[in-house]
Image (tube, rainbow, N blue to C red):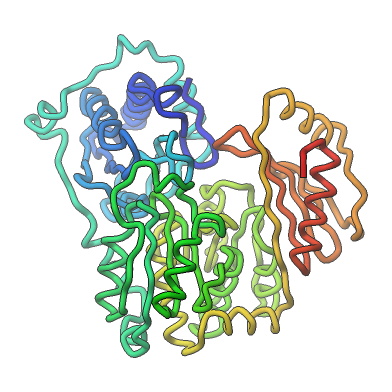
Length: 471
């Protein structure tokens, strides 16, 4: 069974992520393109360093070409945003990336992109999911990889130079050269290293690298940049007396940052710092777009500059759509993905890292000082995030209690409103809390934000105990 979530189709390798299901997704996409009359334009497709990623992309492309859709096959593991950039630059109607992003190593999956290089909308993936699951595997046409190449339906491509040149043109490399920052990079055994090294060496930064080998098990850690997984980077920053540590997740669309003191800088803080930098130092204007579980510090910054802050459901496709609708300046999420107007519509860890390095260089201040100044100006907001694995029974019980019966625990702050835009979000005077089910794993997540970490954690505790989750 194929099931798309907020970040594409992801499943456990050998269980849901199988050759047969991969072929079904490819056939469903190919036939959709034929119906739309865009099949001849073809797609661009890439893969990351996960187990079976290259093989899975070959199976995918054998069906695409067998169904008559030409493929530009990125012939080496690459960042997801590089494929999104190629789709946009080449004016293609669709693209695909074999990756499970930040999921555990036992997962793999496929992300689909549409015109302009944006994440496929929910209605697109819902239709592909429906068609894929209804397909008879015996009726799927395919060509072997070599046959497809011989017929000219599959060509090998490498859009890396154009992608990296685009980033370099958008950042102030001269300011970065003058600062001569020392940086530690942690690609988390993923695909960002070559691109980040190219960008940062071009800007004359001094670089040290950790966790750069190819390891499909990601060093037996979750390939997501968070405080638990970036301990090595924290030590490395202090050991090398670096100005900053930069990490990217498995497919390099998310960012994790360590400051010069070895302290983790949250994705919310990075997003807020960059928005403030674009408004205050570059003089740009535009709204901020955040998902429903991302910091309200963006709202305060936007209000101070006469801008709006747009709230959307979780899933970067919603952020991309709102960016276009409102011509917004920046969009992001608390898990480390962000985009800026003028680049691709999706999240890009390499571009975000480059912009952060520019911010440090232009300001001339250490990252810890920039964070202190931000809080001094706009007030502190801190988030607590917890998640739990769920059985179907416990999932239904929580949904019934919170979503259907609409019961809530007692909170220490007055309730201003409640939203069911995505899960259940309670807006409090001076904070907020949300309960939502993961769109990629069988888990429930509770996020809360308040003026201190302890207050945010207390909000999570109250909600968790109320719905029967251990805390």
